[in-house]
Image 1: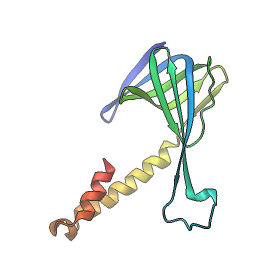
Image 2: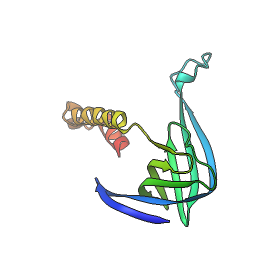
Image 3: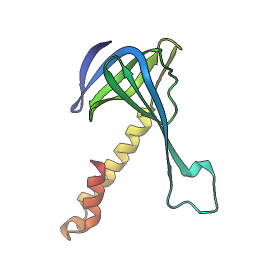
Image 4: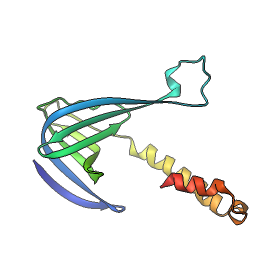
Length: 144
């Protein structure tokens, strides 16, 4: 196992860990849109997160992607991410055994975050803040 290339991304330190996958556990979290009609079972109303938890050497790894990771026990894997809550959160990975490299589409996620930031700034500059309304406070807390 090796940890290399630390850098700073906002306030978190991004680093890379390499090693052999052990204790692989895959989970699927599925959320339903509460505004979805109850009689419609179309998959477009579901939000799915694929969570892979495993160890690389002595380091606990947790990866949450919108697609399943292509890894298995015994694979040689390099992951990039940051430590969070006792586990290493994966942003991207490279499986040397299966010759697969992948990451989440961070450009689209970043554009979505910028949109919500613009709405939050608009709410903070509105008369709702002067009136002490709850909506701007709840929205801004949701961004944390």
